[in-house]
Length: 160
Image 1 (spheres, helix red, strand yellow):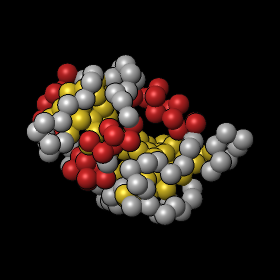
Image 2: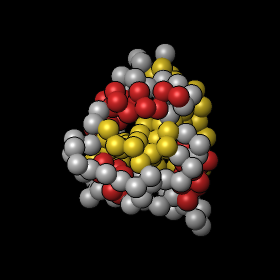
Image 3: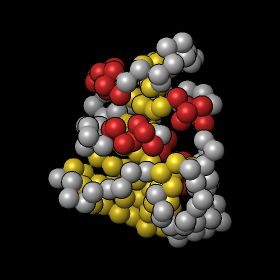
């Protein structure tokens, strides 16, 4: 099973200037719990935004730069190569960015999304979800609180 995991604003924004725009500790905690122990596949810009390999995960970075290296990471040059490296994992996760998400939609079985109920100015967008292909399986809604300043929802889609 291949899972795309992302936090997405109302207007499909993922980020701006290679950074997340919002800070939702509940989403970060869920992300850590969900992906821990699994392979995580990301583009080089997403890796750059993280700043280092995520602990307790097999970090696989996709880049066109044949000379790129990163400590505690496997570097590949295509999504196909990344998925081949992750095939021993029963549930690798695709972390983005936008181009990697677009490519991964053809392979993914699950979309594990956090919807941030706010519009943001951004320069990177999540692809449109085609409800002819994806079925909403679960949804948990949360109101903003002292730690999480926006309303948000955890939504899981599975391929029909």
